[in-house]
Length: 147
Ligand code: RB5
Image (cartoon, rainbow, N blue to C red):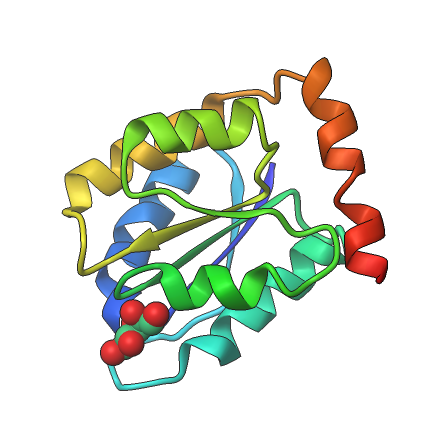
């Protein structure tokens, strides 16, 4: 899979840890949209980069990390076809794939530790969409986006 990742200053360290998981443990391609250090930046600028790539289907999935994960998910969900899920626990991460076919994972770098974030990412990357009754529910999102 091709995965885009970005953070703000509050998520920078977690981004570096998760990049290693994506590349070394899963063998996926990981495109880092920054930032490259912990200097203060604005999360919308970075959420936008990854959300655009996911929305345009240039990548398969995205990962966004800010302090809470809230700002990243708010911005990402403005983009057509983006289903960003803020998951700071394992159950939500699994369900966001099974039922929502989430294509962006948002995480709170100040909410959870790096070890839990790694586990959440692993579950999220390795769980497939369940399909079935959830397909028609996802199909009801497009007309809402187009309103
Ligand atoms: C930055 O201080 C913080 O506001 C940001 O990382 C994020 O939590 C916003 O949702």
